[in-house]
Length: 195
Image 1 (cartoon, helix red, strand yellow):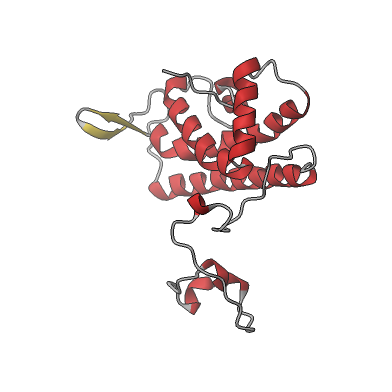
Image 2 (cartoon, helix red, strand yellow):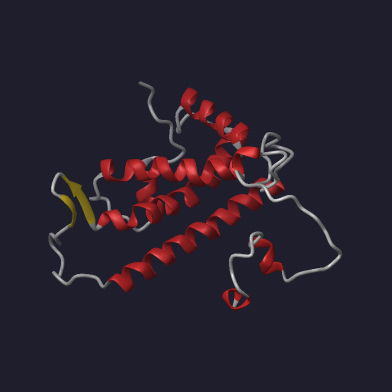
């Protein structure tokens, strides 16, 4: 069985976010894996992602240098916040043989947090993740000559068929539509849904 290679140590995850040091690392590790696969791999593209995995696997996080280290440093913040956002709901719940249960407060005031407050907090964490993700994307764009295997993310089915299982053939009729409609190629939303 192979070991999992991560671009972020659990101590860095806790240092980058507001996750307390006493949170069990085994609780966070599955979410770190999911976030790295879902967000970082998609942004880097398979070729650059695998290059980084090989470099980290060969040298470890502490042994990498140069441009690889610079890229890993840019990846840390968005990966930390995506991991936090992904794990957010599960920090309040645990799965046992009896089902999914809410965790009891250990040494807090004993007041439970309202669902709307949890949703607002999670949205804020996701906002931080997306903001730092944009910083990573800008870094890659400005350094695309250095990271030659990086490609900008695209929904272009002809070049990346695994990203779009239901391609829509593009046809320009000469009519310009509002930018918001291009995200709705199947016409599933009405005009009032874009406000």
